[in-house]
Amino acid sequence: MIQRRGMLIVVSAPSGAGKTSLCEEIRKHISDLAYSVSYTTRSPRPGEVDGRDFFFVEESVFRQMAGRGELAEWAVVHGNLYGTSARFLEQARVRGEDILLDIDTQGARQLRGRYPEGVYVFVLAPSMKELEQRLLERKSDAPQEIALRLGRAREEIAAWREYDYLIVNEDLDEAVHQLQAIIVAERARTTRLTLAIPDLDEGGES
Ligand code: 5GP
Image 1 (spheres, rainbow, N blue to C red):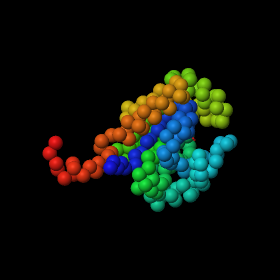
Image 2: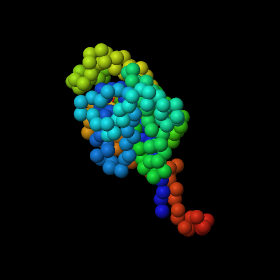
Image 3: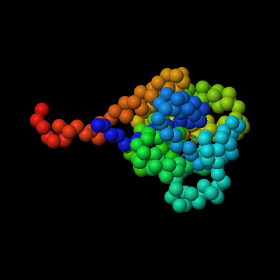
């Protein structure tokens, strides 16, 4: 009786804000979310799996894909290229699936032009101090890399008003709860729904 088109749920945050954990956790809470695995030219970090966390590709391959229009958006982030498969987004949408994307502010801006009906969520760490601490604790990036990421964090945070929702990730469980509430509410938005009720369709009086 009720049909709904698939929607994009775009999550952006400065690195260290806890967005990766948030995206992992929300997929455990809402099991029917498709996840858009990005293409990147950066090297895998320990534990990262090709095809699960990212598709790790050479820059020449990435640029060919971008040139052929195979990326719905792409951007240079921290000196590496990152992009979203246009085909994956379209196929998931046709199947009526909701798709979670973890992308930066430049990419989110590009997708907003293409998919204005998507849901755009910005995630903040409680403070810059906390952000720095989390990056240090992660131990996966070199010191210059951390400095670069902190500098970019300030630029990214300035874009928060371009998003529909803001989540301050002080406590992961609470942040997951908030994101879940946003997705549940957005799924019920009347503009996304098609209702087929025979009596109403026949124009019966109320
Ligand atoms: P990391 O290398 O730390 O996993 O990600 C660095 C940044 O790249 C993060 O802000 C992440 O959201 C962003 N990112 C990951 N995939 C994509 C993508 O497909 N497109 C864009 N524009 N940014 C991405």
